[in-house]
Amino acid sequence: MAGIYIHIPFCASRCNYCDFYSTTMLSKRNDYVKAVLREWKENAHNWKNNIDTIYIGGGTPSMLDEIDLTLLINTILEDLPHTPKEITLEANPCDLTLDKLYCIKQTNINRLSIGIQSFNDSLLTFMGRRHNSFQAMTAITNAQNVGFENISIDLIYGIPNQTFNEWKQDIEQALLLRPQHISAYCLTYENGTKLNQLLLEGMIQPIEDTIENEMYDYLVNTLSKHNYLHYEVSNFALPSYESKHNSSYWTHTPYLGLGAGAHSYNNHIRWWNISDIDAYINTTHFSDVQQKEYLSLQDLRTERIMLGLRTKNGIAANEVDPKVVQKYLNLGYLTLNNQRICATLEGYHILNRIIEDLI
Ligand code: SF4
Image (cartoon, rainbow, N blue to C red):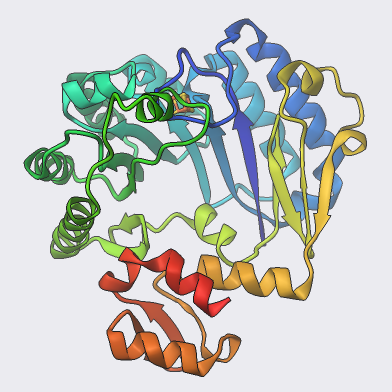
């Protein structure tokens, strides 16, 4: 089976930590959607019979108006022999009014991924988010009231000056709202972002590793107690609500990326579109302007280890050197069951080091 990823690179403003490809030129949304649909039509014949999931990410896809969103979804679905099991839309809490949610519900979108990040107003301001905690909570309850039964929220921890207690309160608030899925990421400082600039200028200090690890452990232990399955290093789901689309990335399932900067993968080849909205909109043959790379068997093995060890399914024991595995088994960072190797909670703290060693 296969998935479609659609990149909608529009945002009302730039968040202080974000290095994703996006633009605030909102007037181009309609032309952009038409270009995405041209790219779909160029590829539909090869992909339409295998599509199981669609993920509309960004940027801020919830900024598409009713006409563009409906056009986008309907045009693709009309070409598919069956409606995919999971169709996700990433959304900003500010956009999720009841009217907007009713409009989204009219399409076949059945999963929302809401960029909450925090329920703490001062941390939201620090990160440059355009919503506040009230809007965050209202967005989730509105979505539940409109009938969405598969809601994911994103949270961020490890923010400078964030206390352990503030992180605990964010998790408690999330649990009160009980979304089906929670993704929680530690704040990172990416080149070109405002936060990275502040870090380089010495205006902010990153949180200490020990506190970051304590926050992560608290997250994992608390969500597990509340019946969330920890199925990937940063992802937690109530039973049967794991993200089908994202899980396919971790197993080299083919996916077609549509939109500026979107990546695709099929049959040992990865290719990606130009990261320029104007150039993308003006493209007539998308395959002519894509870049591609061929993944060798060695590349695929490296990716299987990097991605697999992040998941609860781990990796096959015969992929890696048993001596290195034994070292980490003895230290309690890995487990070995039925010839599958998985990271323990302590192992997740040093996952990059373990992966480097195993590769
Ligand atoms: S974090 Fe999301 S909303 Fe903020 S700039 Fe990045 S893509 Fe846009």
